[in-house]
Image (cartoon, rainbow, N blue to C red):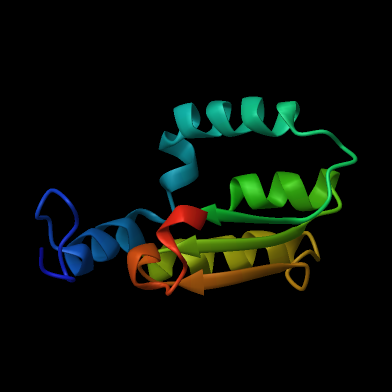
Amino acid sequence: MDANQDHAGLDKAQIARQFSRAAKTYDQVAQLQQAMSERLIAKLPRTATGRLVDFGCGTGSSLLALAESRKLSLAGFDLSEGMIEAAAEKLKEKALDTSVELWVGDILQSGLDRASI
């Protein structure tokens, strides 16, 4: 498999561009993802500690909710630069931009051990 393609053979750069274009309005149409995120966060104990990395963090809605309600070390990773820019802006608006690390890139090329993802 070409490193520039995903498992289905789709071009990763094209996918990143499409999500970057959609970043400004993504939250308006991503209600299912938001609902799933809220349910997962609700199951995470408020006393949880450690590091949490949101792979495919999109516009950072989950990271924002976690930063506001949990004492975790947080990081977000997304293939789309536009999504990361939207996440950074959302965190900055709430003065939480220094509490969350954000990265643009392909998680499969991140150097992380696949067993840890």
